[in-house]
Length: 499
Image (tube, rainbow, N blue to C red; front, side):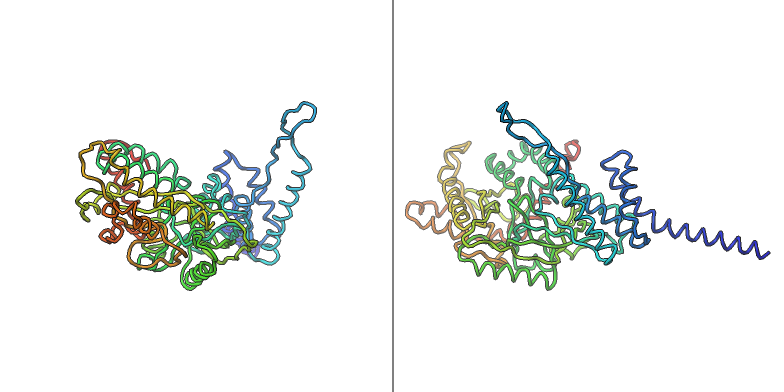
């Protein structure tokens, strides 16, 4: 009898151990399999490699984290590729492709050392390492963005995180970029096919219903290539916000979410940096930023401010970087910096009678016209030049508008200023105001000159009638409503939605 009890106890112990291992072991393996299966049809070898790299020392709870680290390194610190480079052959006087085996071996050895150090930090110190990337190009690469999205989804569904919606295990440090108090509205980089297809498909209908074909074309160009609006101090920006962190251009940027006292401190640092500037470049911190990648679906209403609610749409953003800290990158004296963005101003367009607010409220995109210059906003002279060119473009458009009217008998067009890159237009000050003349002030200064005075009655800069509808604090809502209207119009006409 005793032997049966011993056998039963042994079987129960083995079964318990088996299910214990199954509980801890299979989900990480399934995670790796799911993420690799987006690249490979049958990722057996790479899954086994992930298990091998992560298994020693084997601790069930640690194994989860090691497998996740393996995937995160694969996404953000991938194995170097052996690629040929061009060189000039002295004999043939032609360029030829050649593999540099020695350089590749050095690069591969360095990659392995870095990865071993990160696994060592997790296995021995039981502390998640920080994964470094040079700039946001690595994060914004299309395959990397899709991989991040797939990984975050799988971690959540397999319940490999204590969080209801899982983030990255490791923090990510982006070494170089500019942190700005701006919010990117749309843009080519984030939604090329999704945004361009419906806009192009609806252009004919919109241009017939809008103020003019020119107005609709300029508005579409401004929107699709991606303008940024300033972070304001009004109630629309209360609570957590996302700032813009990019490299090279605003369209090559990521969202950095910051809240509570960190938000106050970061905005204070930006104001101090702006006040310390000797010139009038747009406020920006040249800095490295550290944070964790989260899926947008992790956040609830109220965890992103009212002006940025569209970021909660997981189809809109692949990830959001939750801010943990930053370090300012020192620049040599008199150094020239480079970060480009649209320098823009938005107007309501009409004729003798000002468009009514209800008319504008229903379909604002049919009644507004933006003017813009693409400029280097962190270099003082380039930024000032872009503002001046923008103001002159507004004046020239109004002056020459009679020559491009489809019907010359129409009353002259008029513009009502609403908002700009450096002015929210809602009546409240922006959180980090630039030094120097604003875009609006630059335009008003030109209008005060004798040669431009005849245009003052046609370019109105002191009318706030549209502030509650079209200020920078409401433009993200306008953009969302535009795409919803295009989809609804397409559905009514029997065309499949483009998004």
